[in-house]
Image (cartoon, rainbow, N blue to C red; front, side, top):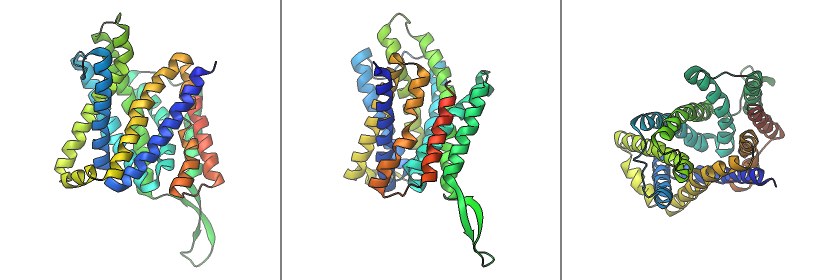
Length: 315
């Protein structure tokens, strides 16, 4: 009883641990090095899993169109979205970074409407506004206006604009990337034997690996262009940063994805998705203890409202 719900909560906890690991690693090695290293680690972990279950470490059986759409998804979701996310971790911290990730469902809904012709119901539109309201409550506050020598209060962003832009780019990139991932998954399912239950079960893992291959390739090109190879090599020798990167990769792309797929087998997708979206709330306590980040009541309420907005997309 409640197996799917418990697994979904486990996924939310797993992604919370991932965010904390990556915030720590990102501040030590930088966003570019971290993105490249964790994607390579993800490719290796997924490759071993695929080799065990399908007999091939890389999904060569995926068709050309599947690679195309999943490649586009990897470019948008990883190279753009995760670059923004990991920079957001560095600039505004993982708890605010995860808060902005609640923009992914409304972004996916809008992209699905524009690209796939999907319709947005009234509840989805309401969810979008509730999510935005929750984020706004967390990042906007009153500050003292001292320009004229008085204490007049005015509304202002409590976070650096750069951090807000990175957070927004992360959520939007994740949502739009998901839509292209759906297109790629559909083509991938057409390319494999639908009667092969193992191949069908492993299709999401194979699709994730294709996206990761494109993402890692893109980040390596950027590292070469920006002449950041020396920093990458320094990062590889940073034992603490590499440990955090490995831990984050294990609990995120590997364990998180695996258990999220398992969760929807035992409960409704909407229930699972809502519970897995609890990360912005769960991360508040460890952020306070590990990174000494103060959490105001208004920020906590904003995170809760944002997650409620996400849940409305699945009603």
